[in-house]
Structures are given as structure tokens and as C-alpha cells.
Image 1: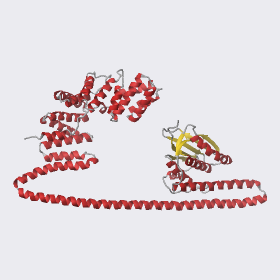
Image 2: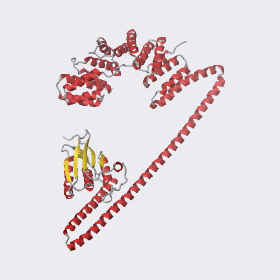
Image 3: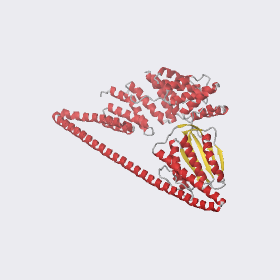
Amino acid sequence: MIKIKSCIVSIVFLIPFFLFSQDKYPVDKLFNIEIKLKARKFEEDINFNKAQTFFREKNWDSTLVYSMKELSATKNIELIDYCYYFRAISFKHKKLLKEAKKEFNKVSDNFQHYYKVKINLGEIALEQNEFKSALQYFQEIEKLPVNKLYNVYKGSILHNIGLCYLHLNEFDKAETYLFKSVNLQEREKDTLTLIGSYMDLANLYYTQYKDSQAIPYFEKAYHLSKKVKSFDLKRAAAKNMAAVEENRKNFPLALTYRKEFEQWKDSLNDQNKVWEIAEVEKKFAVTQKQKEVDILAAENKVKIAERNGFIISSLLLLILFGTGVYFYRQKIKNSKIILAQKNELDELNATKDKLFSIVSHDLRSSVNALKTSNGKLMENLESKNFTELDVLLHNNSTIANGAYNLLDNLLNWALLQTKQAYFYQESLHLATIVQHVEYNYKPLMLNENITFNNDVSKEDYVFADLDSLKIIIRNMLDNAIKFSKENGTISIYTRPSSEDFCYLVIEDTGLGMNEPTRQELLKETVLLSKKKNDDIIGTGLGMQLCKSLIRKNGGKLEIESEENVGTKIIIVLPKFKNHG
């Protein structure tokens, strides 16, 4: 039987040689323990501590940031070597091999783990096809004794040396080292790396046109791949077997392997999968048809014509069907958009109606209360009852303030909804803004015998719009006063902030709320909610306005509350990081 060698080589070598990195093996616990000890020894070096923590957590971007900060700050040679090593490993994992190589070359020869540097430089050289350079690195590591000082996985080193020789066409040496690595992996029952080793041995023999020696290793890799969960290995093993069977002209079995290979391919390659399967099916069909051509040539021409006509008809029907489905889906999509817009419009209209209902009710209540109070005021003015006059005047002031706040919130809410409000985010000193708002509310709190504490950090700067931030703080303070009891306490302070956000807390010892009410207030909705206590003037518009403004500033709102204990309103706003 004549073999079509060019076919099998072109297919087999679509599967690359497997580079075995030390990273494929369990984490070097001794090395991690050692860098922890170094961190304790140099605990004052905060940047080094953060760099080694992120390195152990495999957070490569943060490792690069803090190792560079440490390099710019320290003159300690030992820490400098560790930082260069951390950076090199990070770049290597991010596939930035040139940068990784530069950082490895900056590590001094006195580094305790310099052998790890050579291993990694060898792996980089192998990935960059610098086979002679890689071979030199791996041969140096091969000579190292296996003990606690050198945590080296011999199987990977031997395998990589074999790959170097294979790429350099020194097949005898490649075979020797690949067999050594396979023997080690078989003893260690390292299934994943063993599959790759079998494939590389098969490639070695196929390169030399030794099919009888290569095929058993392809078969071993295929059967062993059934036991692992790696889709890449399963796919590579199945594809190799398909190529082997195609070369043997066993097309039905090749088709089986090809279909198995396609099962593991990513959905993004579905189109390629169809064409590759069709190619194998086509080869099989052509082989069968050729026999019929030799016997009945004329009859075969008719069948070909019929088949072509059927294919063209099928394609036309498929195109028509696809076009119909497309337009049907577009119609459904447009209908859904229209329905969603209708629902949104209905919801906005319902919100508008509810807003007008609530605002008109509360304004009418406020005006009616003022009317009644003014009548009593006139009566007491005639009788000169100054004690009652003082009470009535304070009551009128409270009602007027409530009505003014309602109208102010209504105006701001309308501007926000119609997108006419001026909005500009900038760096704002949080403590100063709070002091400005506090100044307007202190007389009201003194009148209500409410104790006020301001512990806002003077170091916090937020990135927000000035007017909207004042509106938020005013409304939250107004609510705190409104729901606080006489002789209560209102505190405003900042919690320890994160790297990106600042937490402003407004805490009162007032009525509080139950869990369902708290959840209702935090819902993402445009509908307004009426306050539970009818004795207290309020529409819920202020809270809705605050939530909208907080979201627009890139923050969020949190609430902690317990009935008859008090409430904590937590305003989370983005920090201004570039403040000098």
C-alpha cells in the first residue's frame, strides 16, 4: 500500500509540540513559605509585602505595580532580586515574553533561586524558537542534584531537552530524552503531561516517516485522553487519530474520529467544523462514487446531475427559509421593542399621575394646616396669649419648611427627569460640603433639642457634582430630623473607605424602620412611596431624587435600620484619586 505521507504530516503537525513548564506542576510550597518569611523580616517594606502577597495569589497586574514601587524605593539587593523575579514571572504569565526575559536578566547571580531563573529563560527561549539557547539552559538545570535546595521537576526538564533536540533534527538524542521523561511521568502517574509526551514521541517518529512506531503512541495518547477533563488534549488526540486513519484510507473510522474532534471544538469554530466534516465525508463519497463510475459511467453522470440539482434546490430552499426566519425574528424583535416602550411609557404616566396626586395632596394638607394655624394665630393674637402664639409660629415655620422642601425636590426631580439640570463632576472636599449644609440645619436641630455630631474626615475628597451632593445631604439630614425624637442624636461621619469609594454615614436615633420598608426604599424604581407615618409630611420624592443623583454620580445607597432604634443612611461616592 502506498502512503500519502505529505497528507498525514500536514495534518499531524497542526498540533504543536508540548512545552512542559514548571508552572504545570503543584505550587512550590517551600518557595512560598520562604517569601512569607522574607516579608516578615522586612515587614516595614509595605510595597514588598503587597507584591509578595499578590504574587502568591497570582494577581499579576497588582504584583507588577507594587514590585515596581518597591524597586523605586529600596536599595536592598536581596529585595531587588525578588522584585525582578516577581515581575518576570508576571510578564511570563501575561504572555509578554520579551519583557519577562528582560526582567529575568536583571536578577543577580547571587539570587538564592537563580536556578529558577534559568528554567524560565529556557522555557521562554523554547517558545521563541531559540532552540540552541534553550538547550543550554535546560542542560545546566539537568546537572543539578535533586534535593531540598533545588525544587526541580526532572520530567519537564528532560522533556524540554528532548523537544530542543527534535527541533534541531537530532532525532536520536530527542528520542532518548523523550523516553526518559515518559518513564518518569508513567511512574508518577502524571496523566496530563504523559498524554503530551506520547504525542511528541509520535511526532518524532512521524518526522522520520516511522509510521509503525508513531501510530501506537498516537493511540496511547488517544485512549489516555478519555480519562482527563482537558478539552485541548481530547481534541488533539482525536484529530491525530483522524489523520492516521485518513492516511490508512479507512475513511469511515476517520470520519468517526473527526466527528469526535469536532465535539470538543469551541462554538466560535462551528463553521470550520462543518467544512472539515464535509471534507472527510466528501472523500468517502468520492471513493464510493469512483467505483460506480468504473462500472456505469453514463448512469453516474445522470446521478451527478440529479445530485447537483438537489443541492442547488436545497440551497435555494435553505436561503428562502433563512430569509423568512430572519424577517420573522426582526418582526418579533420590533414588536418586543414597541411593547417595552409602551410599558415604559405607561409606567412613566403612572409615575406622573402618582406624583401629581401625592404632591397635590401634601401641598393641600400643608396649606390647609397653615390656614387652620393662622386662624388660631389671629384668635390668640387678639387675646394676647403669647405662649400659644410662640407654639403656633413654630408650627407654621415647620409646615412652611416642609412645603418649601417639597417644592424644591419637585423642581430638582423635574429637571433631572427632563435632563435639563446642570451636572459637572469635580474634586470636592467632603468635610467642607457637610459644614455648609450643617450651618442651615443647626438652628432647626437646636429648636428640636437634637444633639448633632460631625466627625467627617478632613482627608476625604470625592468626585461628584457639587449641587447634587448638597441636595443629597440636605434631604438625608431633613429626613433624619423629621424622624428623630426630641432629645435625640444625629451623627454624620465617614467610615473607613476603600481604595475607590468613600462612605458617608448619616445616623439618627429616631423611629427606624422594619426590613420590608428598608428593602422597598432600596428598590430600583421610578414609582414613589408614601411614608408609613401620616403625621409626618413626606412624599418619598426626596428619597427617589437622592437615589437618582447618587447613581448619576457613580455611587450607591445603603441603609441600615431597626425599628425604634434608629437608622444609618450610607452614601457611597467615588473618590477623587489624583488629589495632591
